[in-house]
Length: 79
Image 1 (cartoon, one colour):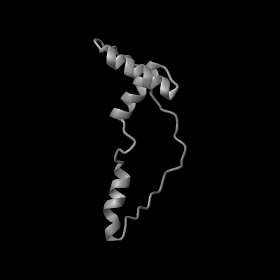
Image 2 (image 1 turned 60 degrees about the vertical axis):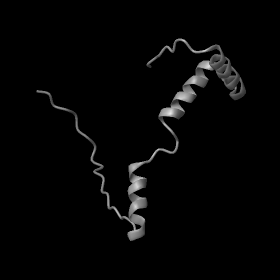
Image 3 (image 1 turned 180 degrees about the vertical axis):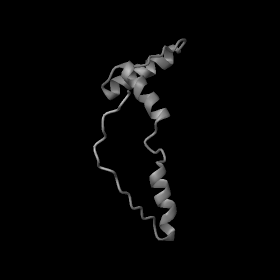
């Protein structure tokens, strides 16, 4: 797992992080991870399939027929 170090955080910011972490019942480090996750991977991100389905809805929708190959994969032959 990757790690980063953030230097030169003001005392006010560090104190606010500790207070926020305590309010959420987790460590300061866990709070920083949650903040970063929320900033770079928001819950409201657009999913391509959902966006395409919504785009086609005014025109009667989108119907896909997907057939999956359920045949088990064979072993690789490297000879």
